[in-house]
Structure formats: C-alpha cells, structure tokens
Length: 290
Ligand SMILES: [Zn+2]
Image (cartoon, rainbow, N blue to C red; front, side, top):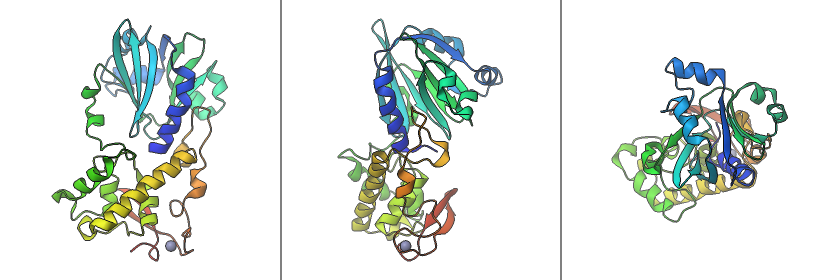
C-alpha cells in the first residue's frame, strides 16, 4: 500500500505536469460505470458519475496538495473552487500521457478507471489494479471527515506534541505501540512499512504496550518515525506493493530498509522475526528491539 513518502512522490510528479491545465473531458472505465450501478461506488465515491463530470469539466487544476496519504486537487471554474480528494488504496497510480498505451506497464494500462482529458492534449489517468482507491469531489475541505481526523503532518512543528498527547490517552495504554503508531490520529501517513522501520530504528519491540514507554522513549520513537518517512521521501518511496510514481517508476527506499521485508536484521544480522499486530505483518529483531 502506498504510504506517505510514495504519495508525496506522486504529488511532486503530477505538479509540474498538470497545474494550470483545464480539464476538457472525463471518461470512466466500464468497472466504474458498473460499480456505480451495483452500488459498489468503484473509485468515484459519494456522487453520481454525471454530476462529477459536470462539475469537473471546464475546471482548471490550480493546486495539488498532500495530506497524509491523500492527494488534494484544487480545481477552479469561474470563481468556484472545489476539491478532488484522492486516495491510492492498495495499488492506485496516476499517469500523465498522450495516449493510454504510453503508460507502458500492462497492468496499469488494462486497469485504468478515470481519464481526465487536458487542454494541452495530454491525459491525466488514474489506474488501479485492485480498485481500493478513490476520488471524491467536495466543496469544502472541512467536509472531508477522513482528512480532518488525521494528526498534523509529521514534519510540522506541532506533530510531536500531538503524538505525545495521543499516546497519553487511556485507549492506547494496553495496546501494542505498533498499533498506536499505525493509527492516523496519532501520527499521520505512517503505515506498516515505516512503522516497522521506525520502531526498529528506535530499538523498541513492536509488542510493547504503550504504557510501558516513558516520555523519552516516546520522543525518540517519534523522531525515528519521522526520520523513516523523510528517508522514504528522499529515496523516492519503496517499490513494495506495486507502487508506481507518475513516470511509472518504483522507488529505491526498499534497498534502505533495515528490517521490513528482510530475512536478517540490517543492523545486527540476526534472523528477522514476524508477528501479526493489529492485522498487519510486522517485522522486528529481538536483539535490537527491546
Ligand atoms: Zn538486529
């Protein structure tokens, strides 16, 4: 599943290609049409397809932001501002191409779901093999409840205080620390991979109940998680879980992992242990993490 670093790379890739473009056409795949008819809301959520089309056509893409793992496209049309909030789900990807064949990766060419024609003649295409991703058109960001509930961006000054405050809540005390750090109300954008890496870097066993960690360990952990996310951005995200950036490339971060997806610990060489915590496969080292 793309995490914060991967989504940030998608945003950075899209920005120079689509800012200032006017959307001149909207086409949906058969799966999006049939999903809507069957009440499954495939990709396009909370709005009927014709209304989505009517609102989006003729709008200019003026800004692309990221909040946690969500992309936020600001679109403007004759003084009216709206937002498309998009989540890549497990395997979503955006491409900007002249023709769908230019994507060059069969899975993404075959599984395109939304095509926005742009005034320049290019096409902004959303592809998604497993179709867990989404696009929502909203009038006000305050209406995006899923975004409003997210912790501050981890790189913002207030994020550490928020993290410490959340870990003090009663509901987390008996829970494994890994479950808490994967929750987006505690720290934003830190999914399974970066939670494993951050806990490893901080030397903390992912099973430890939150209440067993003192203030210094919690601060140390926060910094380790932020560092893991920053490194992820620096190395272009990872190629785990079929992530592709706008150029169809995967990232290099997986070569930097010390624990996630490895057989032996990148620090001490011991065998990596696995356990399921909060439904996610967790990798850790019993020598380095206590
Ligand atoms: Zn180790």
